Image (cartoon, rainbow, N blue to C red; front, side):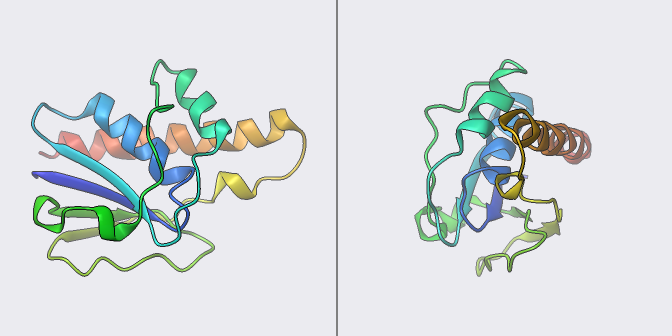
Length: 134
């Protein structure tokens, strides 16, 4: 694997957390990207959930799929569950991890942050498994 791309719609929560987690876990030389079909802004809960495990994604920004260098991506992971995932037209191995969008969580601020933590922990587990297979 030379380049790993995490895709969702807004590039504000799941894919941003996946990018930060993968950067912290990946071997040197593996390029890590995230993007969305309709990028917005990184959710503060995503930043907080990763800060809790020692990862700072505050400097990341939401990106459109068109901003990603297709020639550098050979594995694409889509993260959509309730929405229609963006398509990746480049040549790549495709994986789908349908995870709930924590940005859609309702309730108190603590309830919403708990949804981000659950997705963070599941992403970390899956990313470790994926990278272990390199």
